[in-house]
Amino acid sequence: MSVFLRKMLHRFAPVSEQVSNYEDSRGVSLRIENLNKSFDGNHVLRGINLDIQAGETFSIIGPSGTGKSVLLKHIVKLISPDSGTIFIDGQDIFAPDADKTPKNYRYSMVFQTSALFNSLSVGENVGLWLREKRVCPEKRIRRIIREKLRLVGLEGKEELMISELSGGMKKRVAIARSLAMNPDLILYDEPTAELDPVTSDELARVIINLKKEVKLTTIIVSHDLNFALYLSDRVAMINPEGIVEVGTPEQIKASDNPVVKKFIYTTTKGIKGEG
Image (cartoon, rainbow, N blue to C red; front, side):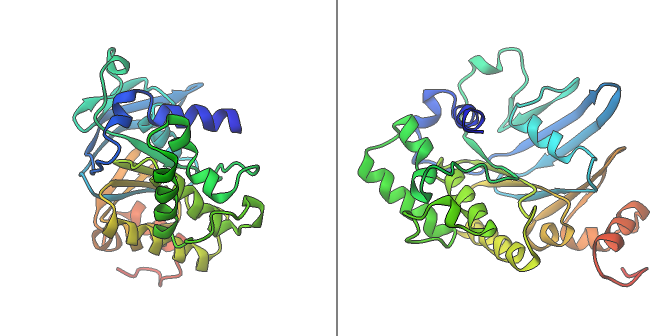
């Protein structure tokens, strides 16, 4: 895990230009055009088209096995598409010369498992990227660590070890570590996995409050419909045939699409036929 995570930390800021403008943060737009991906003959992503606005909190929902996490891995370039492409802030991330073109944005990812280093304290986990990249002096790094932990409701918890944390606290530390990169785009892979409803609700409030204080674009992949509807500006539902519907939470809840209605009914305790 440690080797994998270190590779990911370098991927999120692979060139010096991305660190030089560390103090600046803004939301970036994202456009997915006709994205297709198959594995061993299984067509997982079918003609995916999405437009996500700068500064938007956008959730991608759907049943398990519909390609939600695969789509997220394309956005962070862990996977390349069979066809189609993705534009982030107008840059084609899969263009032949993409790796040679300086990027004017940073992105970070909150992993489903949190992916924290158990041998490091909370503060050391949050400050890992800053220290590895030597972004700023140590005194400044410590201030950033305190600030990011404050944003996720863990002020003063720098010295705790990961083994001392609850599942919900680990998720918040993972968010604080991502925020320490001062990203323009932050991605969450199934953030409520293994969390109880109360803790999931607390996590949703953390993400909502971040939007008030930090300028960034947020993309969330989740099977948790209530979580997505609660905190998103817009939601896209995906199934094996592709994108089923895109809309505000109100539009999704009022949808007449039978696929959307079935998903809502089976994942909530609403009354059948409601909406």
